[in-house]
Amino acid sequence: TFKSCRNKGLIHIEEQTNSSNVVYAGGIIGLAGSGAKGKALDMSMSDCHNEGDITRIVNDMVFKSNDRTFCGGICGAIGGDNRSHGTYDNVNAMVSDCSNSGTIVFNRFSGETSFKETVLNESYTGGIAGVTNCASGYQAVVSNCGNSGNILSTAGYNAGIVAFSNLGTRICGEKTADGVIYTKNSGRIGMFNPDNYGETGGGYMLSGGICACLKESSYSVAIEYCSNEGLVAASTDGKIGAGGIVADLRISDAVQHCRNNAIVRFLPSGRCTVSNAVATGQISGKGTDFKVRDCAVGGRYGRKGTTTAGLDKFGGDERYLFSKFIYALSSDITTQDQLDVFAPGCTWWDGVTPPDWETSSAD
Image (cartoon, rainbow, N blue to C red; front, top):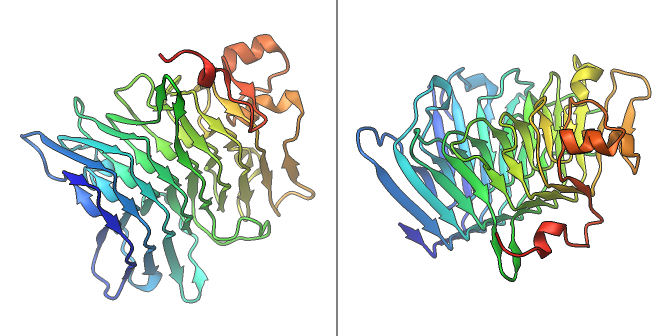
């Protein structure tokens, strides 16, 4: 159990040798619950806060194909590095009322330039945790947490709360009789320079205000009462993209009662095609036909790149673009009936007026 812990120190990890490395870096704890097979491991973290910057630098001259980096303001990884080969850890983890205000950086470079990686699974960078990785029947619940630090990267999974969410994970706020306590991100997520539309550097990237990839969950609603107020941006030479709440959503109806009032940008370059460039949404980016429910959007989404002349598609108040405001790679919504089918309960939001679910009676 970790309670009322605080870190203000800097954490800096830079590759010095050509040996393979798996790095876990967290403001409070680097790795929690790994190897708990054959027995259950219960852990909790509450009222923990990180104010120190965390930096991971990798020189491509010494990078190996199986190197992995897990960085989180509170915990680098819950459950360890088992995501890629389909095994999970028997760990129950409760992370509540924690926050990060430090800047967290993953930077892989070759010489003096950023390296353009063509795979995602080299880095997992989150404001609270890099990855949650629990076996079936176990759970990792991240509740009432917040991130105000910038999460900056050249590639990989990047998010304000949890970068990669696997089995048994729930990321949520809380509905009370007095209103909603949101799990919230207000930090900038993703690219080092989100205003450089001609930028060609950077690898395959998923950037999410709350979660970069929601792969699996034993919860019917895995992300609920979450709010994003920080700019989210991804730039890549391939597909992938960005979402105000989750960048890659793989479970239908798993995102509910969330709100985004920030700009979401996807900046294609190099080999990226226009069809790949639309993997951008106010709630969900990449993820076809996975519906979200009862969410509120009020920011802008957009894509802009150098491979197609004049490509500059930023959403305004055009109602026919509402589907892509909610999630990308979906049919345009032109009627209320279509909206009710593809995004039931979702509404425009002025960023001030509380959505209906905040003022209704507690569930």
